[in-house]
Length: 590
Image (cartoon, rainbow, N blue to C red; front, side, top):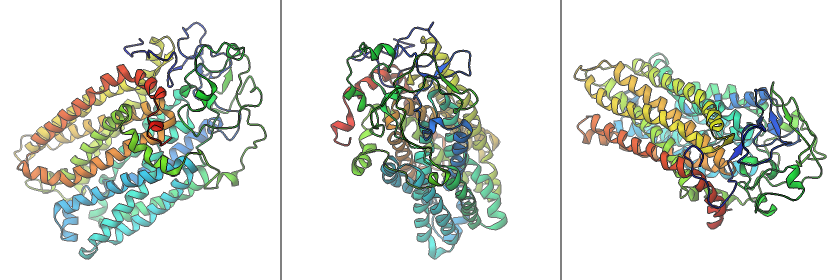
């Protein structure tokens, strides 16, 4: 048992468990014998590259680090503009109520319809992304964002409320690919030891960047009219569209299954294993079914070069010993720039569309994916809940704030998102490396779950504190900055939790990373949709008292975070069980 994680009773090596350091002095408990594997040699101890890159120049893992980071940055910026549409109405509740002549609940429902569009569209876009890649979805969605944002701005009279509802649904549909796939490209573009900071950054873009929106929208509303908040999104999406088209090639790649060291249920190929001593009871047929059916390629035809340098950033990567049997992808030429602009470049899997369509539903029955959805989705839902209600307290008696001043209060959650990003970025890879050293050089994906500790402390403190202090505004007990400080803590916990759950799914179940991230997106959007519809009704039932509600929310969040303890302890056994008893195959969707 390593650091409290129970070992599998049925498998010597569980998919997801990998050697992290290429150091012969360290005990080799997992994937024993790693000589000949390519490594990152930038540090004092070489780090084994997981997954192993192929010898194909079209493999995204072989692209220069600056190119991979440029793709991540470009798509993250587009994700900021897309997800900005979620809270874009947060500080305009009173303005929109007067514009459309509807109730406050109907204004809140405009946010709910957007969230419903995101959750519903995720079902369709995931199989499309798995089969044909992600590029066509990013480009198409950006075009749709331009159109639907302009549509939302033009629906600005009482008779066009239903048109605004339709625009919000389509805005959610257009946003869905960025929520579904921006985190998933981290698994496409980076090795395990590179993912922590990048996953923190993409989560900041998808979840945290949206908190900047109300700050700007409040000022735009008072200066130009609320319609221009939509028009500016359309303008920014139109500006970034060429960058996505020209700078972001397809990141999905069909890699030989033997290179996916984190998805194998046996030791990686070595000189010893090629001589006949495999050290495992698994067969080649077992290897071919590991994790992800997208990793099916023609069998290797020869030995890979013993060294491969310079294409993965300043450190480069080298092979530490004798040649390893890896597919050289003979005859495949590097794609030209013109070829990289194609929206489609071949199927990425041979799976059937309808089976992929149903996979996220089936995975909700898997404890790991349900845990990840709850860990990420609850705090996001509570954040939406706060966003729907906060203008009621700030624009009503006794403050009577205007839209611009309400917008400025979102500086607090925006700073919370930045703090969460910096905290998760600093801890994610550092904690994994430290715990791997303590574990004799063996990396377990469960090490990512320790990030739930700061999520618990920050998130629960934020919920309990916000509910207690926001009620005191009307009585003059607290300054407005006190509940906003607790809002900051809640959002910081939200970002850390989003990083923890995303990293765990990507590292532990990389073959199902897209479906897993989709489960989280569906859960948090449907859950947030329900909260947005019920927020005002619940507040009125509690006689406009927030404390009882947020005490309940904080307690639910506390219990949800404590579920991470059994997930950490039994996570490896669950991975072993999942490999031996394929839930997707049992449900006939693989």
